[in-house]
Image 1: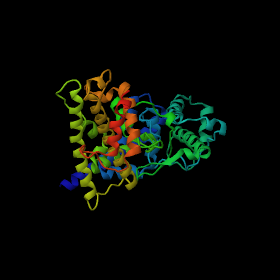
Image 2: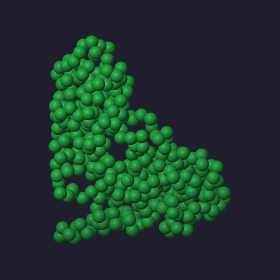
Image 3: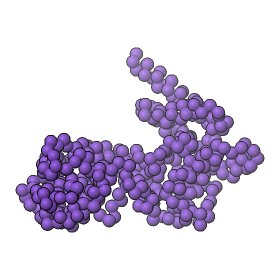
Length: 400
């Protein structure tokens, strides 16, 4: 009985998906004024693959749905996270498909990363605002693509043709700017942003602090938009990395580094250093347990190279943070040396105070990369590493 009810429910939901697909096509063709209905249809089709495996197969079998959702996401500005292929399903062909929109080389060469993302929303809005006249009919005839699934509205043909024209032109002139997604399950080719085209500051100062602490080299990509094509690829990789080594997760790192300190003034620096040692001891135990395993749990999205690089970055963040406190403790022991200086640990949320912390953390990071080569967490200050010796010698310069 339960099996029959499940089968009936799946059949009913399948009918709902087919009806929503056809109704959304009609809404796009007629440019329906009922915006609420169009949004409901979009959300139904967007969420259908997440409900169960049967609906996921139904949506995958209908090639029209991916292109319809691509158009609607651009129209609704649904993809806001600034990743190159957000809102573009894997079944949507942009680099390989045919296009009737060929842009001249001079125009393509001036297109930047953010222009590509903004162009999709702008073109979708322009298509929606075009009058249904002879000029529009001629445009539809010229931009209609042969390789799109039958039944796709002409508006979507125009939109996809334009997106293909932009990306294929960029790939022709700027092939070196394209890279593969670091998600092993994806590996899609996408247009990567330059460092100058990315935000110079994180929205959250604590994110900026840990980013500077974990900076590995001059060639460090430094932004997830250069590594992953969509935010979903990024989140999948992040979740699997955190399952292997929890300190790869930024939230775990921030939580483990948030301490309630009882002392006041310069004495807080040593108290913060002891808390950092306990945090690093926990991280070192976890890292040793990870390396002692004969075999890791399978991670479909994470390659061995990415896992190694992510662990090295997390280790760098932990060691630079404790190194900063270690250097500060050398000054905090002397009232004269600490006079007039803002030292880490002396107040709450000191990592957010980047006006005073940015230079010291960069200096400690540079010193760490020069003097410490092992990928292990420093958790015993009684064993004086060369890195710690250099910090002791340079403490006054770091905080000047």
